[in-house]
Amino acid sequence: MPHFYGRKVDNPYVFLHEFCKLCGIQKRPAGSTEEEYRLRALPFALKGETDTWFMRLPPNSIRTWADFKSLFLDYFFPATRTNALKKKIQGATQEGDETLSMYWSRFKGMLDACPNNRMTEAEIFNNFYEGMTSESKDLVNSSSGGDFSRLRVSEAKRIIN
Image (cartoon, rainbow, N blue to C red; front, side, top):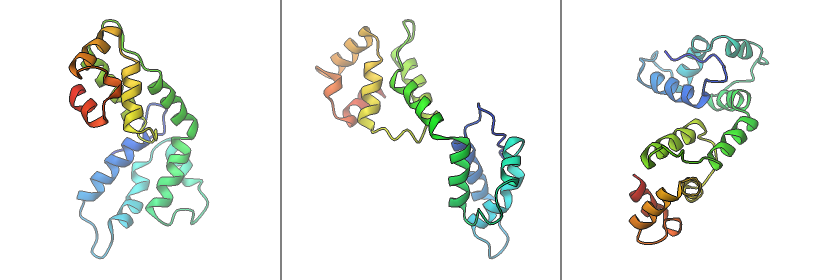
């Protein structure tokens, strides 16, 4: 079972994904729903600061999985964290010795770390393009037959992937 400790390096979105995935394949007691199973299994997955936070919640503050998820993400992935990660994405630049594919991989890692960034795909590809070295811009512009930054998202994806 995945555990969540609430450390700065822990990503609550990754934990929720892994936890739900595991709960989805576990055998549940007859007559219980997957949501009920998740809520019952939850205390066994929360450790350290997270367990303390959970135990201090007011009684009956969590009646549904949506209640838990909302409270959990508000506490362990606050807007300040989202904003900081979003700024990092928006300011990402390709390192001088980094290939385009390495930069794309690192950029996608930043996106994975902040799934609630609320950026459109067009904004994402624009930020990625703006952070490229001039050599990489020349390469993708050549591959796109002109100006990569003016492509539709589907075409930009095809070129980058």
